[in-house]
Image 1 (cartoon, rainbow, N blue to C red):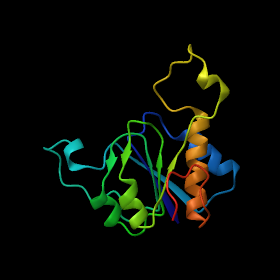
Image 2 (tube, one colour):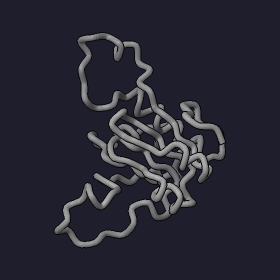
Image 3 (cartoon, rainbow, N blue to C red):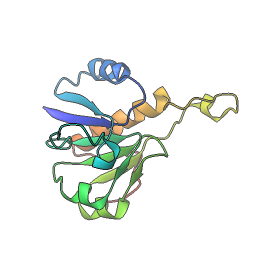
Amino acid sequence: MRTILYVGSSTDLSYEHDLLEEWGKRGVAIAQVSALNADDVDATAEPVPDPLQDVDVVVLESGEMNSDLLESHPSLSAVVILDDKAKVDVEAATRAEIWVTHAANRALLSRLPFVNSQAPSRSARRHALQDALASIAGERPSGRVNEL
């Protein structure tokens, strides 16, 4: 089973689950966490296991993936940036041979001034999932920010 971890997602992931079902991708699990960094988590909470353990791809809507996180998780094949609020150390990812992609909103309506949604569009979410699946399959994802 391969795992795609959504970090800081502002929406439920039923659309992504529907796409996996439609595309016949039964060997892929989707998980979700609100944050990766200890600074972003309630300090009074119990210690939690490493959310990146055994994860193949991270889809990052908010938060940061720094060099320590990237270099200490060799199972990662890609980090997909779903929103411009998310930050990834691209140089560290390249050194660790991890694809970094940007799932741009390619929908025509997104360019209109009256469309004002804070959540990533379905177009961006679909492209994020496509990039994640491509990297899991060992293919070059389409929204690449770096080259390996």
